[in-house]
Amino acid sequence: MRAYRMIHWQEPPVLDEVKVPEPGPGQVRIKVAGNGLCQSDLHMPHIPAAMEELMGWKMPFTLGHEVGGWVDRWGPGVTGLVEGQAVAIVSTRSCGACLECDAGADNACDSNHVGRGYGMDGGIADYLLLENDRPIIPLAGLDPKLAGPFTDAGTTSYHGVTRVKERLGRGRTALVIGAGGLGGFAIQYLKILTRARIIAVEIDAKKRERALDLGADVCLDGAMEDLAGEIRKLTEGRGADAVLDFVGNDATIATSIAALAKLGGYILIGAGEGRLDMPLMSALASKSAWVTSFIGGTISDTREVLALADQGMLRNDVEFFGIEEAPKAMEALEAGRLVGRAVIVP
Image 1: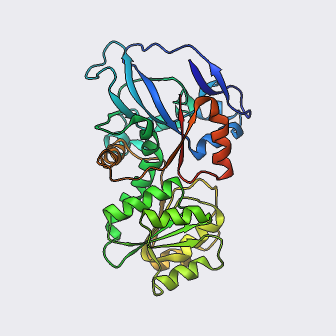
Image 2: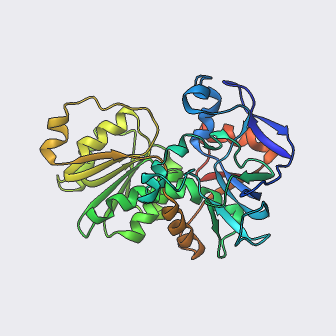
Image 3: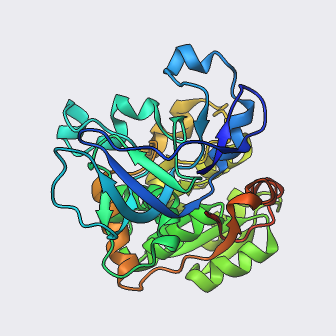
């Protein structure tokens, strides 16, 4: 079968021919309908070889962690599945037995250090072999070719919104920094789950237009001077009650903290490797504000997101690429030419 794989550390992935995997005891094989691309896929060719020992990643491996498809075959011990059933695959990997998983925080499970497309085979291939049926979520009506982006981009942003939604009643303001794939989903969830005014920030003009179409009340140019000051003007000096930062560089972190209202909450989601360079007491404690972060969403989050998608409540703008066009899709993502999400179709 065809698979888009990392073969060597710090080299570009290549389209390779590998054997179709056969499921062993407890395992399930998925025929892939589509796999969404993510910014983290772009980072893979730049990761140092030290990751193998540090995180337990093994070369070679197939990229891709936003997977939708059909149940194809399973090994002994697996029950309750139907051949040909349309499914989505939870993006994050979890054990189901640790304290974090027991608490429903499976996105914090240590098993997630190695996952599909992260040191083990992922979904940019004709078939995906799952080690168990834990990440499988049946689809009620959603085309599995469209399901992949909901499992990571859609679920990660949903997890962020659910962390702040209780703070966002009438008269409150939510600030979304970065209105691309994840930010676009966040705007929709804020519209569905809260009564807050939504201010989005985005440097790309087309994405600003899309943010307004998705439900943002205002979308500011991220390149403008004194962005935090403009946000305070729009909120009559109060600031934002919740900030969801899908960029995470030095500038967006500084803007987010400066724009926070009293008792506000800031969630760092974007992997921009930014730093907070300011006195924490004056920046946060004086406002009784809080800061948090996380990686991905939970199985429960993914189920709730897919339920919304199955009901037609979410807009999912995608551009399809054949598996042989995977390098082209990666280049388009890196160049910022995609307004929504790229989906690789085998």
